[in-house]
Amino acid sequence: MEEYMHLNKKQFDISKELETVIDSYKPLFFKENYILSTSIEKNIEVFMDLDKFKQIVSNLLSNSLRYLNENGRVNVQLRKDKKNIFMTVKDNGIGIKEDDLKHIFDRFYRADTSRNKFTGGTGLGLAIVKSIVEAHNGTIVIESKFGKGTEVKIALPLVHWQIWIDVVKNWSRGYSFLEHYWISFISYIKKKILIY
Image (cartoon, rainbow, N blue to C red):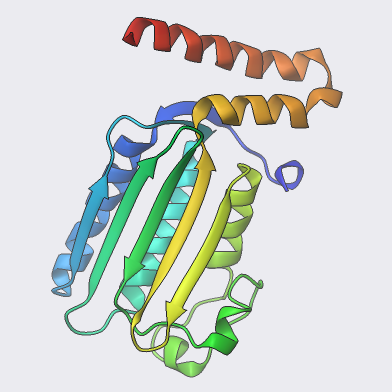
C-alpha cells in the first residue's frame, strides 16, 4: 500500500500531536453539548507521516461528531506496549447496521439513510483512513452496534519497529533509500541514550 501513497515519515511524539488535534475539536463538541474525553499515555514516539496521522484523527472525530445524538459522548484512548501503540475512538452514537459494517471500508460505499440523510458524505473517509493505517504497517478494526455506538481500534508500530519494518520492506530500493531509515534509527538510539 505504501508504494501508492507518498509518505513523509519522521519521528514525533504522537501523544502530544493527538492532544493538539483533539483540542481543536473540543469547541465543536461543546457547541453541541457533547462530551469529548481522553485517556492518553504520555511521551509515545512513532515514526510516521504527521500530516497523515492528523488526517486519521480528524476523520474519526468528524465521523463521531456527525453521528452523535443527544447526550453524545466520544472517548479517545492512546496506549502502548513493547511493540505497538493502540488508539481507540469510541462513541455512543447511532451506530452502524451489521450489513453495512462489512462494507464500511469500501470506497464510495454509503450506509443506509439513517447515517446519511442529514449529513451527506462521499463515502471516502474510512477507506482513506484504512489506506493510511496500512501504509504505516498498522491495522484498523471497527466494532459497532446499531443504536448504541461505534468503536474504532487502530494499532501502529512503535518508532523502532516501524523503522526496521521499513528497512526490510524497502531493501531492494538500494542504499540511498535505506540511508534515510538508517539515519532515523541512529537518531532514535541517540535520543534513547540521552533519556537514560
